[in-house]
Image 1 (cartoon, rainbow, N blue to C red):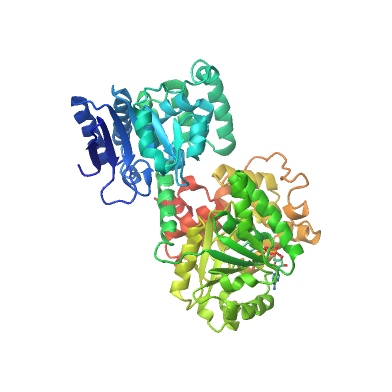
Image 2 (cartoon, rainbow, N blue to C red):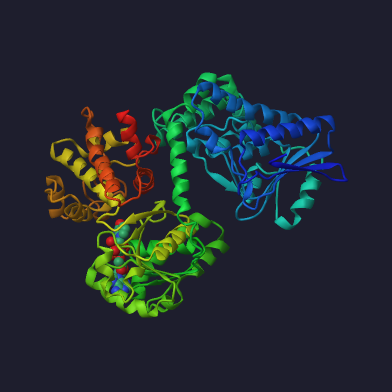
Length: 634
Ligand code: NAI
């Protein structure tokens, strides 16, 4: 066999090892599945005492179905055949007369988890990389290979729907606590534990009575609640898959083959195609960090303000030792407080929180510079201040250290004039709020050292953000495309359309936040400054000037277009949306993306789409602005 090995042990146990040929991670392609079917045929003839399924890859158990094969699903028949393939095979696995066990170490996602769920036992190995989830919804599809049937039976419908509708994954300990895994053991005892559990005859832990009711006669109550939750986040016309998951579970016990029309509708929907495209775009961005051996251990951040403080905290969260410099300790203190809140939210475990906090070191004198692999400047947006800082930094840098600026609007070519080696300055441009935004632009100035740019990409990848290489131009990609969009939205307000109506038009289009609320969030003063720089000399909108004059700067001042005194934008009801408003507002954004691609600020249309989706939240179901326009023109 090409992708599986089969080992018979003297004790009568058979261990099958999945090790997909030519790949670093396992995925369930048609060929891999067919071979697994052959294994079951063989074992039917000579049933073993028990079967253990494990992975031969360092990377993990199974990453899911083969996403490349999704792109070939151009007809409804192919979609149905794909669902049937996994549904039938895993039902067969679930029905074998001998005990079966999935030994799950590392990622176990999508079809991989559906395979593990079809085994009698699931043994999770307690390691940092072990995670289990059904992320199909993120690709616009559903877990049709038994996940919708078996996960609710194992963990109860509320927990199962939460996992299936959000796509989030859980670690080994949590899996045990929820009842998804039968046990969770450290790697050194996993072999023995697997064999013991397999032959234990131990029945599965039954679902508590209430959960069985909710998964049976009371399904409709759970389904209605879930539909309401989903409706808050995703509109069915944009994202049909989560609604389909609820219906398939509630009406067909997770068997999609019982609702072939729904399969056709979901699998051939533009949303599924576009979300698969977005997945590939994301993989492309991740690829940018791969060409460099650069590995950062220590990071030094200068400026503990909104950005620097949060960048430092993020790097510490991701395991780096971080020194954080500002003019004095008082200015660093608020950043430490925010960092503590971030660590508490993300890490939960008090020991891990303490360790992360220990890694974040206040450093008012800048002693960390000499040891840092990456130095990030995030001080005031002022050329003279940055010049003075760079002059003092350069002689203290380690050879090979990356020197980066987080500047939004200053030209790198102007900032680096004071350096003896100007080619070493790169931009590493984070977005606010740092913890939430997946994209980071890596800015290459004219004549920059390519190795440094690659090292910067590797660093961004190392901290689990998506690097997007861009050329040095005002606003780079993301800010430059948002400026004309926000301007168009404010012009609409000048015309007398209410901010609520403008925002609602874009929410209905599929944006995560309306453009007027976005202006309030960014700050009206910043929007004004960005407008001056990026709007090509156009006059500022009246509604913006009036508010800035009254010092109504948005969220940070408590009042902008909306009242923020409660911490959230107090919005009134939206009026009826004028026909074509969304198209009118989004057109300047797409025009600008096209221009930036033509100017070479970003290398190609795909990367531009990736940047705008991950940097602004541009409606992912459209596949990105360039793709959206192309499809519209066809
Ligand atoms: P901020 O005003 O919140 O923080 C700047 C910090 O730098 C202050 O704490 C200040 O005390 C400190 N500082 C100033 N000069 C210093 C020096 N010589 N040595 C040590 N510390 C010094 O500013 P914010 O918003 O964090 O912006 C920082 C940089 O990040 C700017 O270049 C800005 O363009 C950029 N940026 C800002 C974004 C935002 O949304 N605020 C988004 C992306 C980039």
